[in-house]
Amino acid sequence: MMIIRLIALVFMLVVAVFALRRLGDGFAEMGKKANHVEAFRYAPVLDEPGTPPSPVRPKGAAVAHLPRTASSVRDAAVRAMSAQDAAACLAGAKPEAPCLRALAERDRPAANAAAKALVDKPDALGVLARSLLAYADRAALIAALTGSGCEREPPSGSVLTLLDLVEGSPCALGFDPESGRLPNRHGELLTTLASLAARELMGPPEVVFDESEPPNGAAPYALRAWSNDRRFTAQARNFDGWYDVDAVLGLLNELARRLGKSQRWILVHMSGHDALVVSANGPWLRDVVTRGLLPSESGNERVEKAVGLEHVIVERHEADLKQARTSPESENEGPALAPRTSIR
Image 1: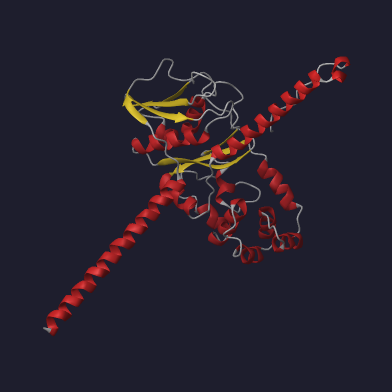
Image 2: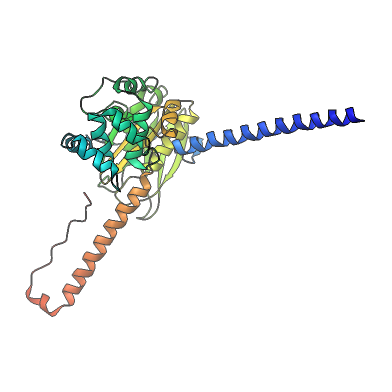
C-alpha cells in the first residue's frame, strides 16, 4: 500500500511540474504576443476582391523627405557642454539626454556608469542609456544593423544609438505630419513609406494605394491598397489637415503580414512638424524595439494635442473678434488681423 501511495505521489508531482511548465510557456507566449503588439501597429482591414482605379498612382505620388534639424541642434548643444557640466546635469533632479550624450563623447566609462541608473527613464534618455550599455563602442553599434536592411556607411557626428544610424539611411523617412491640405491624400504617404521597402512591398506584384475622401468634414477616411486582385481597406481618423500616421503604418504592416513579407514600419519620433518613420526587417525591428533600443511612438497622441491647440487658438481669436465688434472703441479702429494658427 505504501508503495502504491508513493507511486501516486510521484505521478502527481510529475503532472504538476508538467502543468507548471505549460503555464510558464503560456505566459511566455503571451509576453511575446504583447511585445509583438507593442512593437508594431496592425490595422483592422476589410479584405475583398477588387482592382485598382485608373490612374493607378495618385497625383504627386510622393511625400517630400524633410531632413531632421533636431539632430544638428542636439549635436551643437553636446559640443558646447564640458564633461563636468554633463556630469553635474546627470546628477541633478532632471537629467537630460544631451547631458548623457556629451559625457559619453568625452568619458565613456563615466557615461556607462551613469547610464546604469537611467535605463528605466522614458523617451530619449532611457534609449540612450540602454544603448550605451548594450553596445560597447561605435563598431558594435554599427554591427548591430546587420540583418536590419538598413546597413549603411557610418555617418559623421555623434553616433551612440541605433536611431543615430537609421535616421539618415534609405530605410527612414522624415516628413511633416501636417499635410497642409484637404483632403490629406494619405495615399501619397502610403506610397512613399511603402517605397522604403520597394523590393519587399512595391512589387511584383505591384501594390497601389489611395484614399477615399470623407463625405463630410468630420467623417473618417478609408485607406485602400490593391494587390493580387484584392482590395484591403482600413479606416483613418479625420484630423483636419493632419495625417493619421498610426492608421497608415497599421495598413502597411497588416498588408505586409498578409502578403507574407518580413518588412515592418514604426514611428520612431514625432514632435510638432517633425516625424520620422523607419522601415526594417520585422524580426530585427521587433527585437530592438522590445529591448528599448529603438523608440516606437503613437502618432495620434501627438496629433490630437496639436489639433486641440489649433482649435483653442482659433476659438480664442474668434472670441476676440466678436468682442472687438461689440466694443464701442472698435468703431474707430481698423479691421483686426488674424493670428497665425500654425504650431510650427
